[in-house]
Image (cartoon, rainbow over all chains, first blue to last red):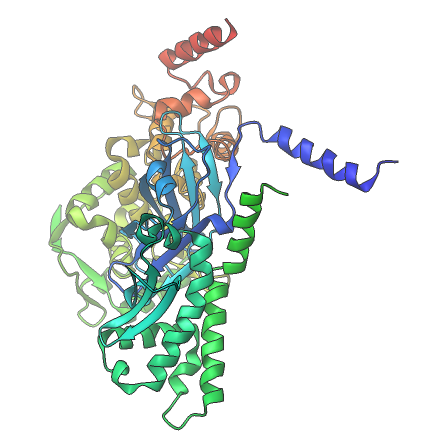
Length: 269
Length: 258
């Protein structure tokens, strides 16, 4: 009789043998696509794409958008893999030419060998974030690097915007720390909470351009923000902020991403 | 040939035309050409001029004629749900008369851009006779002939099979169109090669099935038509393959064996 542990080993080896072309299946945590719907024409942006070291630099990255019910199909070429390998947050954007309403479309990302057309990596049915042009947090939360007197990061809200400040004395003036996806996963929900609290409690921020953008973004995360009034209780506001932070974390799959990055760094230990 | 201003059906016009199609599906009566210039049922199509109305014996010719009238923005016009039915009725002597000269209407999706409301709003746009003709010539030019060699009232197996694979975007795949043209177009007879439209050895149905297998390993949108032909199983497709391609494949096999 085979012990359970050995059964798993057998299955793994069989699967490995069958993948004779070494096609790599990207996981959901490796890709983040955003569809910007309120601009005409709508656009598709690769917010994040993590390609392993084994992907050749000259491999071509493309995304196919398709919808079975209407037969709509569009293909976007995003150039070669080297840009994504050096900066997974590169964020290139392409406009839809054939599709007017991309809501409900399915997306398939392919990494292809330029010469032979062989697939090197792919993921089908990528979950996308639907966002209006003003619903990108980078629009109203900016990052700046300055000496913080011993703190690693902090949030500053001013009339012209909200800022995540990073200690400048860190390697590469703090950019290295900010570019770490783990760090961003930890910072963003907390930053969102602090900024939402400031915005809702201080009226002077609500009439600014960034304040309006931030409000639209918060409503897209927690629709109950629209019901918050001057005389709403602090508990009601807290509930809204909790919901927004939770939706943000789930939408960007922060836990899954951290798990995956950690397991990759620990090498399955 | 008479030139007329291109118009499009409004909602009332579409309703009237759809109603007529439903009633005449099995026992077709004379096409309701009075609808074409009824000001209550139609409006002038914006940004379009006039079109010559004549009878075609070949779908490719009809597609070419309509494509010229639609101009550079043809890709947007072929999805206009008011314009396509109007064109289908305007060319009724081609779209509603079969190759034997008998009246034939068929399903509504051949004449209107139909949505199957009952099941996921499934679109049957690709079955529209005029739209399909313009689509293939607009995308593939001269090579679109291979999809459109039949009478304008009919749709060939090639024309049906390729756009039906929506997820793979086969209808937009230039390498596939090129491969189909090289495999199945008989230049001398100006029609399809024998056996290309069937389900048998090397036919279009088998080609599509093999493409589904190749799609697991290759991005068929990025390769050339010749590369695609070289990937096909030689035994099955040899009698359709251009002779040079067979030679190249044999040479490649010999080199690999050596």
